[in-house]
Amino acid sequence: MKCRSANGCPRDRNHICRQRETAIALRTSTAAMRIEKQKRLEAAVLAHREAIIRALAADLRRPEAETDLLEILPVIAGLRHARRHLKSWMKPKRAAPTLTLLGTKARIRYEPRGVSLIIAPWNYPVSLLLGPLTSAIAAGCPAIVKPSEMSEACSEVMAKLIRETFDSQDIAVFEGDATVSAALLDLPFDHIFFTGSPAVAKSSWRRRRTISRLSRWNSAANRPPSSMKVPTSRKRRGASFGASLSIAARPASHRTMPMCMRAACRNSSLRRKPRSINSTAIRRKPGLLPDHQRPAF
Image (cartoon, helix red, strand yellow):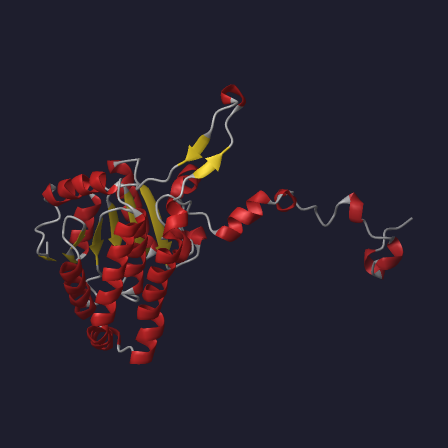
C-alpha cells in the first residue's frame, strides 16, 4: 500500500476513533464556530491560489483562467453561500403533531451525521474535494479526505493546505493509490461522498454494503444514472447516483433529492400517469387520418 500521510496508515482505527470523539463534541457546535472554520478554509484557498494553479498546470495542463473559473471560484462561492445560509439551515423547523399528541408542539432539529469520508476524482481535484468538505464543515461533521493519486501535484497541494488549516482530529487527509481508498472504505464512516467512475462506484458501494448498512452514500458518477444498478430502497435512503453535486453535497441534515425533483413530487398534477396516444379520449376522426390509415366502414 502506497500511503503518504502524516496521520499514519488508514487501516489504523485510532484516527477515526479520535474523529468520533470530535463528532460527539461537534454536536453542540454553534453556527459561529462552523463559520469560523469556513473562513479559515477560504483564506487558505486564496493563500494557496498560485500553488493550485501551478499544480493543475503540471497535472492537467490547465490554464490559469480555467483553474480560476472551474476550481477556485466554485469553492469560494460555495463557502460564502454556506456562511450566508448556515443559521437558517441550523434553525429548528416547526412540524405539525399527530392527532394523538394534539395540543403539543413539535420541532425538527438537524444534527450532524458523524464522521464523513470524501473521495475526490482526478479531473476536478480541487472543487470536488473542497466543495463536499464545505458541506461537512457546515453540517458540523469531522471528515477524512482522499485526493486522487492521478493528479499528484495537486494532491500534495491539497494535503498541505488542509494540514496547515485544520487539526487532524477535525479534518484529516490521506494520500495514496486505490488500496488506500479500499482501506478507508473498510472503516465505519457515517457518510461517504464519492466522485469517480461507475465501475469503481459499484465495487465501492458493494464493499461498503457488506460492512455496514447504516452509512449514507452520495456518489456522482461520470455516466448517466441508468448505468448504476442499485436497489430502489437504497436509492431512497440517499444513494442519489448521478445527482447534482450542489445538492448531494449539502449538509447531512438535508435531503439528497434535487430541488426540482422535490417540487415535482409536491405537485400532484405531475404525478399523474400520462394517457396513452391510443386512448379513446383522444381518438382521431377518420377524416383526419391519411388514406392508408383510415378504417373501413
